[in-house]
Length: 332
Ligand SMILES: Cc1cc2nc3c(=O)[nH]c(=O)nc-3n(C[C@H](O)[C@H](O)[C@H](O)COP(=O)(O)O)c2cc1C
Image 1 (cartoon, protein in one colour):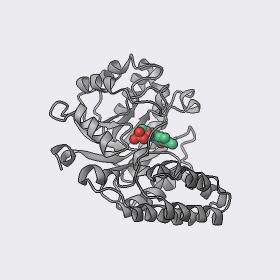
Image 2 (cartoon, rainbow, N blue to C red):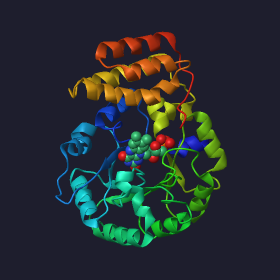
Image 3 (cartoon, helix red, strand yellow):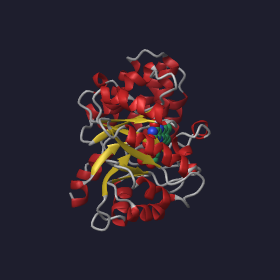
Image 4 (cartoon, helix red, strand yellow):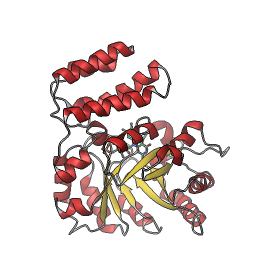
């Protein structure tokens, strides 16, 4: 293991719709070793009531033994601070602000990466939330993209963040317009790293040990000592031991992938949300997991199209019978 991997922290990125508490518990139980899991965002409303789903997801009882950082997406300081206090009351000493979600319905409401369009408004919001927690509130880390329509303001953005006492700044070096496609803008990240005075977590397109190696070669910690963590998302859903492969060079096995699938299926089934919700979830999972197998397209297609549980299970059995691991997730 190199110094890089020894000192680096590895986090599970939040993926709304997938990495809720049921998923996190299964992952943590089967493949421990990550330094933290980030929960998908909760979206506090004017009424100051959390949805049942949100309450369950961040309930410490449902996250026992896991280091969890809950995430808030809000566009008013009042709503943010209310949610931050709710989380602090449940024992969380750090909360994360979502400044990255690129979804149109979110962005048009000036939330997520929509907040990056107007830096003056963002500054007022940040002033209010950091003042609001100054005395006894939780710490606030940020997860940000590098701009809305383009990355011209990236350096201004990082300078703005420098004003506040963030415990950590997670940078996903894409703009809102980039969505999740193409290569992250590592050249812009380089500028950000030079300016930022905060501990940085890198995020984006780390899907394999080779991707990780490429990134560490480009951003060695000797030159960029503020890089303290890496956040893995889609790559880790596909390959649930990606962190172990990176740090210990131990690739995933067929039986581990089978156990990962079977345990998740059972845990999701036990929630009793009905067949169509269950198959919707497994279809999402296979969008990622399917990439791990060689020559598996026709099996993955059958699995994702299954309309009932027996058909689904038969298709899964066939895939595990005929396909070996041998790939990684690759972004569209
Ligand atoms: C389906 C989906 C849901 C996501 N949900 C969230 C979320 O709730 N909060 C967040 O900060 N990022 C969210 N993200 C972004 C990821 O956390 C991560 O930043 C992004 O996928 C880039 O990392 P990766 O290339 O390692 O996947 C989501 C991404 C996807 C594809």
